[in-house]
Length: 197
Ligand code: VGL
Ligand code: ZN
Image 1 (cartoon, helix red, strand yellow):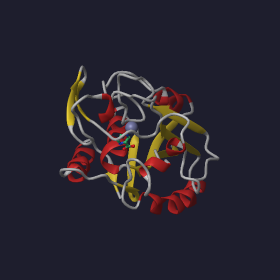
Image 2 (tube, rainbow, N blue to C red):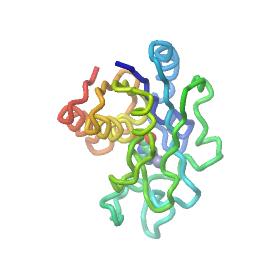
Image 3 (cartoon, rainbow, N blue to C red):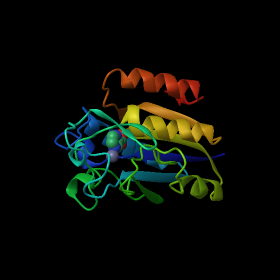
Image 4 (cartoon, rainbow, N blue to C red):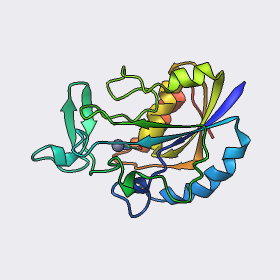
């Protein structure tokens, strides 16, 4: 079994001081760096939105950050502007090791948000990660990063659905946790067969 570490969105905007800061987001950098040597492959994901992205509240008149809207593909949380391509906020935390095998960017289509590292929020547009893992013979995934209840959650559920053996290391994740979203995410991951440790 070839085992990869998937490091989700450890970017400045999700760390304290960032535009969509996750409490304690920077605390996971050192443990993640230390874990990297234990895997046969390391893959980083990077949330990578164009300015004016449709998931930004600022793109919707009369909407504020953290309100909901309806997109053609379903309900969508509206976020503060974050991880705009090429900005410091979109850069990886400066302490994160970036000597990874692959960096996969997501959320670059203006009209679709992408939480999962595998499919955008329409549940059908692939990022290409599945093909990369399959062609490398990688069958087991451990996931860490930000945020537990959004990008880690959707990545883990999609990976389990695709047949990967998936473990989420909760000690190396941090959550946004709006309106009980962390508890809901943990339940959804368990129901999908994801191991939470
Ligand atoms: C994320 C909200 C918006 C995440 C990305 O990485 O969890 N959350 N974009
Ligand atoms: Zn985003």
